[in-house]
Length: 204
Ligand code: HEM
Image 1 (cartoon, protein in one colour):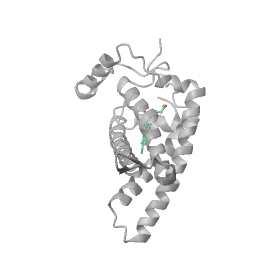
Image 2: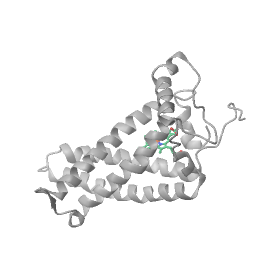
Image 3: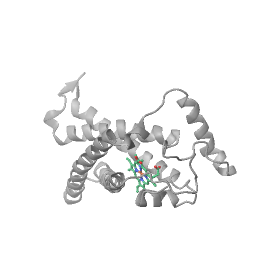
């Protein structure tokens, strides 16, 4: 049984380095992505700068993702991302109830952080969805847009690039929403800032 007043070491150095780079690059990608989407292409310098930054940040994020993927494959951190399917929906509901009601009544967390499980069910679900579905799709569709020759030529009369573009936009949208929700829920620690400290010093 763990003493919850003792700090637990949960975020190894490589996860912290991956995370800080990932967060900075995602922010850059969101800002430049919005700029590319909504700027007037005739103002070429601004548009070109946004495209250049977006491309470089996208390639860096892809390499950083490989670090995350391999790190999780070969260290025990990957175990936190394995969802136990049995009873998962029920656990999600309990956590949802806690986030929407329990937390405001100062009820204790239904799934306290331990070295065996550092994520609550909602964190686990959203991290798995974003890290193992949305980010890979964003990377693959981004590569497809960077190298259009690689994309499928056409399907039912619509260019393959249009589908790729739509998928890339969708991923960007989901990642933006994820990041806002992620930041909000990270304030639900012991104090509003304690979780943010954890991802810098490694201790919960
Ligand atoms: C300014 C931006 C960000 C801040 C301040 C931030 C903050 C945090 C904090 C405090 C934690 C530790 C608490 C927890 O495990 O929930 C965390 C973990 C995590 N964050 Fe973020 N985050 C940011 C951006 C992102 C982005 C853009 C992504 C993915 C697209 C992301 C994915 C994750 C993942 C997967 C973990 C768990 C890592 C692990 O322990 O294996 N974060 N973040």
